[in-house]
Length: 119
Image (cartoon, rainbow, N blue to C red):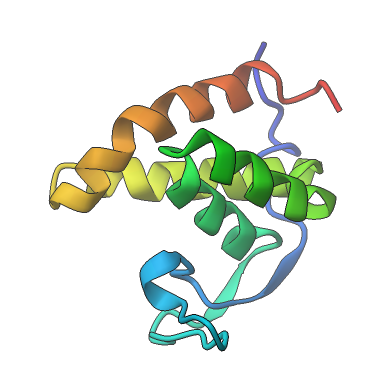
């Protein structure tokens, strides 16, 4: 099933951290680090980015997906997830962190492409 031009056009932009993953979060008091990528991004980009980094751990991935389901379960959220997937897969040739993520991101992106009209 092909995506229409309207489905791959970002209609809702928001401000985003731009690189939200576990190395940019502190605990026990939450602080978000590394704001150099801050700027406009597709709605749901930060949630999609954090989710992509959890894919290697199924239990954590399910928890993150559930937490951000109000965003990720939308058309805009799926488009943000595909945007993040492209960025991470493209980076897989350049560094080992993204190379380790790629085998998890690739099938998720394929699933998104195949099921984009399910909800």
